[in-house]
Image (cartoon, rainbow, N blue to C red; front, side):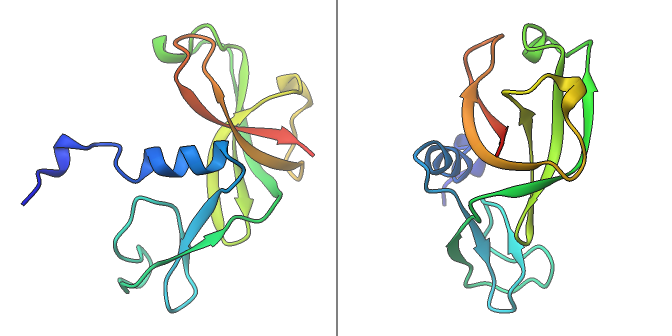
Length: 130
């Protein structure tokens, strides 16, 4: 059996690549509950047989916070807004880009994308105002 710790981002990296290619998806169980990869069973009901379905083209910011003093992983990105946005029946967390942090607000309609962190050039899930 493969040790899962050998591949800590397995499933997540593929999901990030799909978003970057404009083919973002989420997982849906037979009962209709949505979740994000990597998953083998539904976190809500425990059902298996998850199917990939496309993410909606846009989502809505539910809540956000502006970070002025960031952790070392994001220190060159600060200040930035981090938000939770709902895309259909899934919630995604990401940085809000292309708008100043003080102009971010709940209810803002956004698209999901992947960009690089200004600190370490690693991929970051981002939202862009629509």
